[in-house]
Length: 104
DNA sequence: GCCATGACATCCA
DNA sequence: GTGGATGCCATGG
Image 1: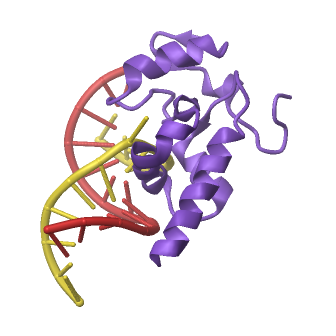
Image 2 (image 1 turned 45 degrees about the vertical axis):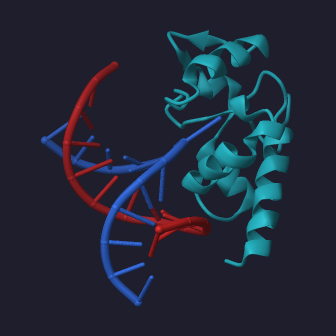
Image 3 (image 1 turned 120 degrees about the vertical axis):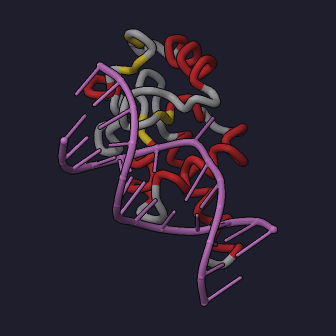
């Protein structure tokens, strides 16, 4: 993987995250699958570095539980977007981002 | 080129 | 529902 390709991958991930509409969330695996490259770990690694310019809080784990590092803030931001948070967890089966049907 | 690390995912007891 | 083990993929030393 060349350094240039990595930047392209970063942009692709950032764009995917930016395209997540309010009230919806996506998992790291979903983003990775959406860009069609790398894996959930790579998405997380990118969010850590370049996530500052995108709604990173709309990206959570497949378990519906946010990352330990940001969990506290993330839950607050999600609630602010109108996402129903229950017991510190997100109803993925309801707010799961669908790239084909954004916003429903 | 091998080893260690990581905002993860999935399987099994 | 919880916790441990294994797999994946790219980065950095």
